[in-house]
Image (cartoon, rainbow, N blue to C red; front, side, top):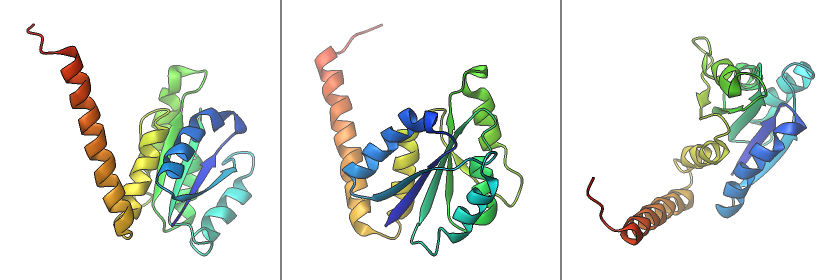
Length: 162
């Protein structure tokens, strides 16, 4: 199982590395690359077209500002693409979110929250878990652990009437 984690600029890495940590925890192979929809569009198209043959099963595309990377990649591959909008210096990431989520019919891109790298990775793992039972078991355990941690935090605070 292999995921491609693309970013439009090296400056997006501080967000992207949070997804890498999730993949490492779940022991999912991750290939991280800088590919720009605007500065290297041919490279983006070639990567997307060849991804399936390279053994990649899900692609996450992180980009800020005019975040067209996910859409460009989705246009050239049959693989699931998850858009990860990155907060930019303008409009607090709203521009990135809208550029990622507003895909035309026929070019689907699943989109997570602005800077939502952890959820992008977890969604990729859930997609892979349809095929890989081990990942499904790990995801169930992850959710159980998260529920226990939330319950423990609630217990520590104690019940408070409002």
